[in-house]
Amino acid sequence: MGLVLALGGLFLWGMQRNPRELPSVLAKERRPAPDFTLPLLPPYRQAWGETLRLADHLGKRPIVLNFWASWCYPACYEEAPVLEAVWRRYRDRVLFLGVNTQDKEAEALRFVAQFGLTFPSVFDPRGRVGVDYGMYGVPETFFIDQEGRVLARHAGAIDQATLEKYLKEAMP
Amino acid sequence: MRVWVLLLALFLPALAQEGPPPDLSPEVFAIARELRCPVCQGESAAESNAGVAVEMRRLIAEMLQEGKTEAEIKAFFVDRYGEWILYEPPRQGLTLWVWLLPLAGLLLLGAGLFAYFRPRRTLPPELLEEAERRLKEPPA
Image (cartoon, rainbow over the protein chains, first blue to last red):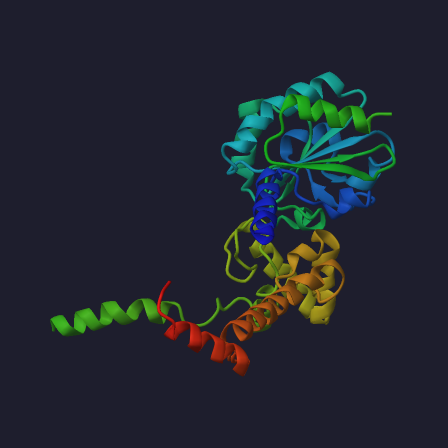
């Protein structure tokens, strides 16, 4: 009887856990954000240069690192307008950076144009950076604080309330 | 003729599946088989064709080429994903219990079965005599 209750309790506890709250080694230990150098997608080269090195931007202001892909439907399509809107509001205090993951450049550019994304995105066709961040699958968003440490990870499409909640945590 | 076509149809898929894809060595798949594919449900990084799994295999191949050992390669993934990425949880710390609990369960089951099937002890002779006497008594 006690065993049945214990198993039932375990089951209920398991059902109530949020699968979006996947454990992130980086966020749990507040590790420094893994560095990378990647080419920018062509529309952003004029403003940001040919390639972007993350380390050049760490430690200045918080960074929102968003992993996305044009084939990630519908989640990436749901969050793209939210990211763009929040970026426009906070762009003087926070850097939004997209990492286009395992995508084809032409299709990535179509996605960028479809949502008129003005925050820079780098191009990572192999998906190497995702592994360094312990990424499960796109979309995933990492919040990096002003000291360059990973504060939190959100898996799946992000909504405006969640995004702003993490931004408030990341901003001093 | 028809038999040949039928045989061909039966064996062609088997031929197509023989051996791992030629671009990566079997060692890569041996290591990938012990690592979880992060986006999949119950698939290892060797079986899945998900983007992350493909990249994991590519990284394993690169690290093998650099002369890294299997333990070093696994440590690389554990460092990024945590011990969750290993298909066999380490036999220490919190995950030790997943190795011990089945054993404990088996022991408990064995003890239960033994207690159930154990030959019962016979009643002491004086009680047996008493029971026999009462059986022979006419009902009141």
